[in-house]
Image 1 (spheres, one colour):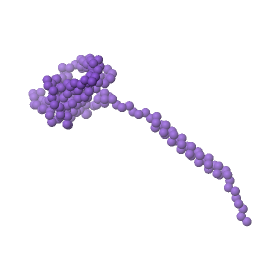
Image 2 (cartoon, rainbow, N blue to C red; image 1 turned 180 degrees about the vertical axis):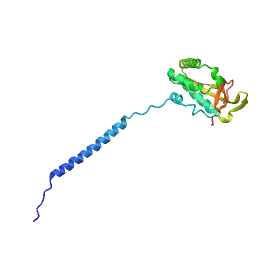
Image 3 (cartoon, helix red, strand yellow; image 1 turned 60 degrees about the horizontal axis):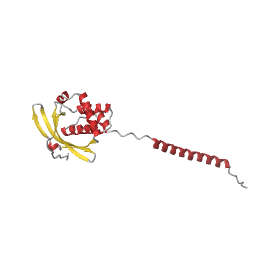
Image 4 (tube, rainbow, N blue to C red; image 1 turned 45 degrees about the vertical axis):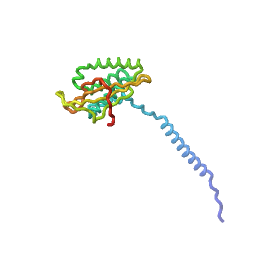
Length: 202
């Protein structure tokens, strides 16, 4: 006659304990990962000043006269608008001087240029004035001239200046000269006597 064997409750208890341990372990693993992901530091956004300072112009020099002038305008806008340390001002001036022709560098001492910009920055701050934007004429409107100094590109542009609710435009004309290595360098600029139409299509 067959006898009934009772199942040992010990096996059930051990199984339940192991199952609970696995569940608790998974819970803590998920919680720990969530905490780590929520406390990860979000990298600080790189400022325009840092981006311009880090630009290696030996390797990534602008290829066209218009791109050279665009970079010049970006640096100028940053120099006059942003909160900068003296070291950042010095490095930004150094970058803009990398865009100058040899003759222009000779006629503009770096320390004098830095002092001039610092004075201008103070005036802008006092007048609550900023460079709101800039516009550069299209590549198709650039005038190319062969001179004794070399091939020259003449480009028109303007800065939009903002002082409170008032907006004004400063029209300028730039001359860039092509060096023997093919790089275009800023040789001179002057304020335009008249307002000119600027085509930004390219």
